[in-house]
Length: 141
View 1 (spheres, rainbow, N blue to C red):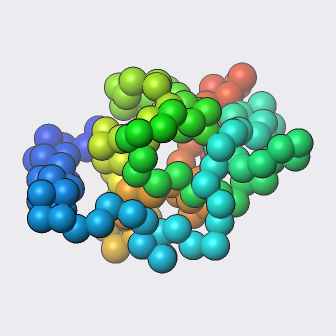
View 2: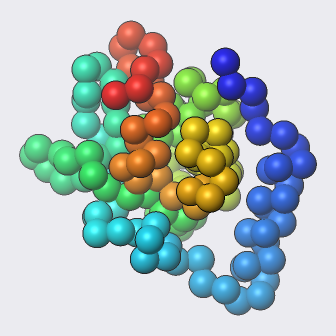
């Protein structure tokens, strides 16, 4: 079982994020982070597990969630629930992709993808490596 991120790791990441904000660096996703995918706005059931997805009536799984503390989103609620129940975080399930959710996703990425691929944005690569919450507990999809 994976251990929770260390306080030092979270503090360092939070410090880097604060420095970026205070120095006026843009927090919009980079081209690599945003990719060609739309922003997730709903969820899809995959074998009984809720997974962030985009579109209606048939949601697709290839979508991104990026730092956006100003707008609540159902897909973010689903992500936050999985992060809490399957990866031992203690996030508010409020639908806002704020600093805490960003840091939790980054921690998952560091653990499963390595630091070089950790950008804090949820997308198809992160979806494949993390566990998602569902009727039968936690599972990768």
